[in-house]
Image (spheres, rainbow, N blue to C red):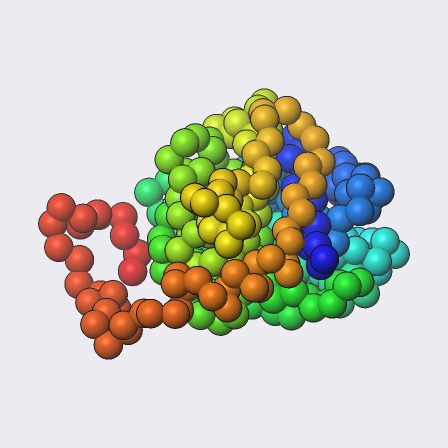
Length: 292
């Protein structure tokens, strides 16, 4: 049985980036001790998802993807023989980006993803949206896994997960920073179900403003031949406390399921979906702060 183990690092950030570095490194070591293949951080870990209103403070908080903070996790990934997805506020030529970088177990950077659906109705109007969704073949000790990424609000757009499925994603890693209540958890359940893929989400715990823990993992396998009805696709839901939570995805089961079931890309009719790429927005959905 091929198992892909994702460690959800549901951690409270410190007061400084230096503290966050040390907290993060220690949590990754704990994840490795638990047998994780990859460690996943909450959204924008380097600054604890703080987005100052002052432009100079915001830019001062942003860091480069090849700087000391991010590189420390690449070095640790190689040391531990464990992949790490680190999240941070990334400096760019214009406004900073909400970014995640995935290092494989050899310390090689295999994915850089910036949040596409920035929350422009809130503080993220001061950030630059990402350009695309990506999938990579993540090398693990028991073979490659096709891994994708989306961040927090991306979850609320079915297109995000659908594009990742079409690009081949088997498991999607989702850094997060918001209250995970029944409706948002239901969105993740739906994205996993309709695309027949695993989704692992890491949130900040209670104690972080506007967050409540409940990091989760859905494996996307709703039906099995030996079961008369449907099964619960939720394989992990944390409580509100800090901790390193391990979610084990049975990839053999998922891959067999994808070969036989009716969801995903099995019976789509893309020639009927022209309106999905229509850019026009009509009432009641027009918003003055929409950036396009």
